[in-house]
Amino acid sequence: MVSRWMYVSLVILYSFLLGPFIIIFMASFGANANLAFPPQGFTLDWFANVFETSQFIDSFWISLHLALLSTVVSLVMGMPVAYALTRFQFAGSGMVETVFSAPILVPGLVIGFAMLNFFVLLGDMHVMTGLFIGHTAILFPYSVRVISASLRNLAPYVEDAAVSLGANRLRGFLLVVLPNMQAGIAAAFVLGFITSFNNVPVSLFLSGPGVTTLPVSMLSYLEYYFDPTIAALSTLLVIFTVVLVQTAERVLGLSQFV
Amino acid sequence: MPYLEIRDLTVSYDKNQPTLERFSLNVEQGELLSLLGPSGCGKTTTLRSVAGFIRPDAGQIVINDHDYTRLPPNQRDIGLVFQSYALFPHLTVFYNVAFGLRMRRIPKKEVKERVTNALKMVGLEAFANRRPAQLSGGQQQRVALARATVIEPQVLLLDEPLSNLDARLRVDMRQEIRRLQQQLGITTLYVTHDQVEAMSISDRVVVMNQGEIEQIGTPEDIFAAPETVFVADFMGFDNHFNAAVESVQDSKLTVTWGGAPIELRWHSKFGSPPSGARAEIFFRADSASLLAGTEASGLAGEVILHTFHGNEVQYLVETDLGEFSIMQDSDSERFAPGAAVTVQAHTQKWIAILEETAARRVTGEKNDRAQAKY
Image (tube, rainbow over all chains, first blue to last red; front, side, top):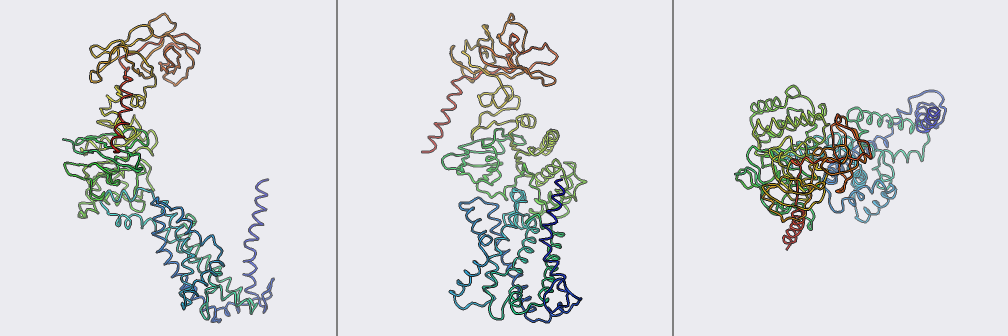
């Protein structure tokens, strides 16, 4: 009885989750000039069109660079913070944790808008620099959280053990803590990369003429055209993300940290 | 001359309430000394101070005549075994044990030799290439033991090493630790809250309470002759009653039990109290016996409750001196609740602690603390 209801609700849940993707996926192969469902005919022209649209190609490279750079920097900055938060009890450590979570809690549009105003006040700043700072800021809390989780999995006294065996604090960290953080760092990398790569609200405000990220350029493309090119691009992005996450799950056991 | 000396150690996490205050203790060369006490008594703080992880406010740690007080923990040459094993999860058993030797830049060939030997001593030579996660709790603690001893430390410190293991394994491991400790002749400080563990493994036991030493002695002394109320209670003297001292003579202290005098062991170092002084008399559940009826000499009482424990039956008996818990062989005569019985004292295992001593101890502590503050 219970299992039947569970089954039904599961089907409903999954159809809402996966339905849109299936429609987009099928529409991207349709021969109509407008995005339509059910699609008529079959063509790969829209996929070809994606690669011929320089707007997409340019913004893809910008998104890729941006995601890599801001993820790496947020990891490097997040590591010592995660270490301090998990290893030491200090006055205001709860405060620090809350402040570092703020970018997750505050709506992206608000962050984007606030940053835009802030950067305008600061004066002439390169668009790419603004995007980089904005993305690093929103990724930072994810880095701290995921790396903290991997540190909490490590028995608290292992560093003391290393020190009692003759390692100084730095060597203890490098030889014992860091190797055990590897999986957490990799997981934070994948999560950060995807978060940055898919971000719209912050990028929307911080983009500038000629410098824009892929999701933002998709949005502006949609304002003028309504052909299945965007469906084809979406299909490619879904495949890209699924492959990335699946690889990470297989290799690292991503779900253990998120 | 003691090998490890803790001199007037003061450690406070909270300024107004020091965890340890002018705490002193000596450990002889090759001795295994246990720090026994409930959680919060300062035993782990003492151990971590010796290891160098806690910087004391005052006092000294001296090992083999060298002052270690200001030495950072990585230069102390001390073997440390943790309750949680604290093995390095990313390294194999071999490299876990080799860690300390590699830090000391010992040549590869010698490292291999010494690690192999150490693993052989704990019976794990076949597991050298496993990861800690692939070992049982007992095996992991053996690795931790090998890792701490392979560096031939000046002092070995064990912090509740058996607490994470199940009961049967604990008995095996404690014999193993003792055997290894004696084989290596290594001076050892062993922290535990389990009195059976402390009894079975130690040369001497230190019973600690609230940062102070209650009693130091051999396991036999601590077990049979507690000198303070706290130790008596901690060592399982379940029954006690208050009595007036009749007389003290020839290492015997006499009190009244069921109308007749009984003689208890007495040591002159505790003084010779005047007759009429109050004393707290302690005895374990197994050092009294029950007889049917109230005609025999002894203390009259009534059985309130009996509980079957297999080889033994536990009776709760109400008497004029209070309720006593008494263990009897389950083969002996059984008594139902309500039965009138006589409680006979096996006084060779009973102890007396003067009330005055107990009281002085408590106020003495307070005075010491008050003085130290100013």
